[in-house]
Amino acid sequence: MIEVLKKEIALKIKREIKGRGDCVFLSNAILEILDVDISYNTIRRFYNLIPSTKPNIKTFNTLAQFIGYRNYLDFTQHYKYKEKINISDIIYKSVAKNKTEDIVNLVNKTKKSSEDFTSLIIVLLRELLHNENYILINRLFKLKALNFDSFSYYQALKIGNAIGLLIRKKPIIYQHLISNINFLDCIFLIFVDYSGLNKHYGESLKAVEKSNIRYDITMFSAAVLQFRNFLNNKTIVEININLVEEKQLHPILRGRLLSLKLLSVNSNNTLVLMNAYHKSIKIKGDLISHYYELFTTSILLKNLDIMSFLVNKIESKIDFYRQNSQLNSFYLMCLFYYRLKGDIKNENKFFKFFKISECRHSYEEFINLIYLIYLYDSSISKTKKVNVKARYTNLNKKLNYPYFSDDFLLEYFN
Image (cartoon, rainbow, N blue to C red; front, side, top):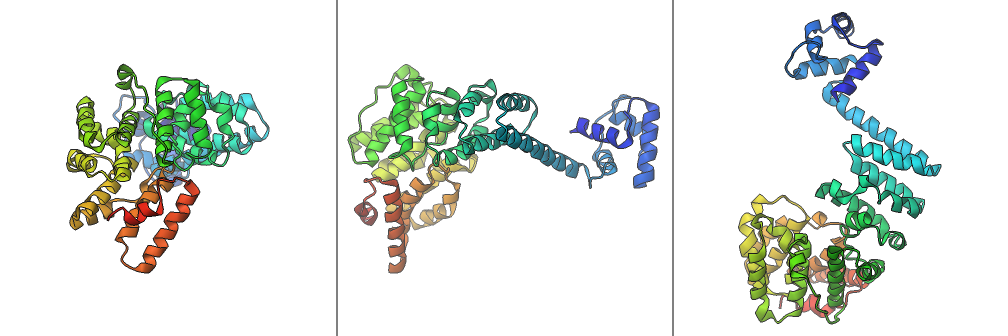
């Protein structure tokens, strides 16, 4: 932003700052306009014309005020907003005129320069989805600029959730991008649509599994499809896992595969599996990711052994984790666990911690369905129970998962 500030100053005074005379000119101009005395030597240091240390904030503020801003912070915020508006305007015009090459060049160029590349991509993809330009979306997701490994995990989450919500309304896109690796990594695997397992998302999982495009993607698709079987009261088929490959899988996927085993084995063997899995975890500080899928699995199974195991491994360390959707699922499991145990103090503690608004968009309705089971049992008045039951019934009718029967709601805490 310092270089941008220098360019704005040059436009203001209609000359480049290249020597002592230019610095004297700028010093006099600032004194005349702002009535602030800033020495030409300070300006020389700012422009690196003489050896210097980093300019202080007063210098930045004065120079920003000279070109019409309240201070340097106001300048940086305004400029970023202006830059974002300009890029958005280019996107809208390019999409409207179907200028494919301009859009591709814009993506490649912006990736190298913009700090907020993810916002650009979200705006662009939303426009292309609106115009049903699936061919261009497919091309963009093949660019190096949209390679999944070039994003941080939280950038990928931002893109995946923003676009995933739109794809719910335009499921046809899966037909066009089902074999595009970057699309699968950035959208399909990020926005795990638990509301659409019996709809288009579930059908797409079948296609991805069948294509066998990459080992981890195949395992992911197979695992979610088997979880769908569980929710539909169907038999879970064991997934053949390459033990060497498994160690390289993402922690959440490894936990998902463990969850499937726990859903299908005798409850007497659960702790054996849990202990063996825990020993295999290399980085113990990443327990939340490794056990993320098990938080809801233990609730669905109403398995106190699994819940107790997870609480003992994680609860004392929760202060070290960032507040996020994964930790929020742990809070929900603890809420169920302590109610089942009759520990009112801890139940109240985790009731305050859990926030339905902290759930990922793709999981929100599914988690809300589980949460309504707790709310039903904890409701005191008959009127509130009737209201909660109606919400549970309507939501489950929408999701269409037979496992969530009325008896499951009414008898869970008995």
